[in-house]
Image (cartoon, rainbow over all chains, first blue to last red; front, side):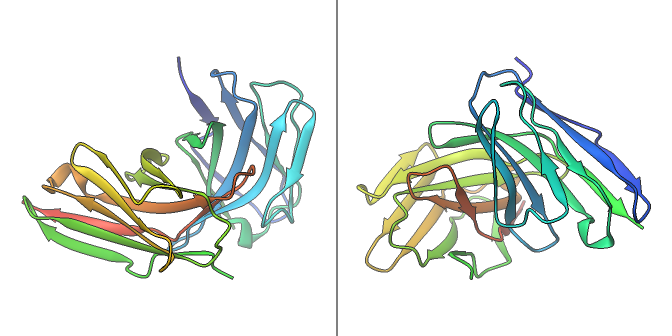
Amino acid sequence: NAGVTQTPKFRILKIGQSMTLQCTQDMNHNYMYWYRQDPGMGLKLIYYSVGAGITDKGEVPNGYNVSRSTTEDFPLRLELAAPSQTSVYFCASRQGNEQFFGPGTRLTVL
Amino acid sequence: DQQVKQNSPSLSVQEGRISILNCDYTNSMFDYFLWYKKYPAEGPTFLISISSIKDKNEDGRFTVFLNKSAKHLSLHIVPSQPGDSAVYFCAASSGGFKTIFGAGTRLFVKA
């Protein structure tokens, strides 16, 4: 049981490039989340999903897109990377009130 | 608009003493509160939680206290150990899908 896995662990992008952050969970949880954490700040919700085929925006969705074609996978897409998207990104799944987080992806946009 | 506030960015405590981490919230609709612990280069992990119908929940060395009238909760760690050094996030939810996180408090436990 791997829990929540994220790839890649680190990535450097140039302004205007695009990329997909991968997230997979093997706990059969319906709820999944994407957060970003900036230095000295809490976790800000980007997008969430309550099940396959259903996604919705969180607090800071601009510049991102998501899809949820299966229960297991919840990829986060950055279409035109900007320096403001430099952050650490965490994916999580949820059972009850508890969320289970992946190890994070550290993204730098230069 | 910060609905969950952790006003102390850091806290330093001697090993064996009590660590008290504080959290304030503004939304009276929150009905469940959680504490997460985060080590460097890892994702947060769940530590302890409390429902709004309770005022205390204890799990080993960790106790969470909830004061609804003051919209305040605290996490007590007794005794503190060097392995407790981490960032602690307070979080709250209101029965829906979303959880609001505080900015975190970095705890240093000195040996």
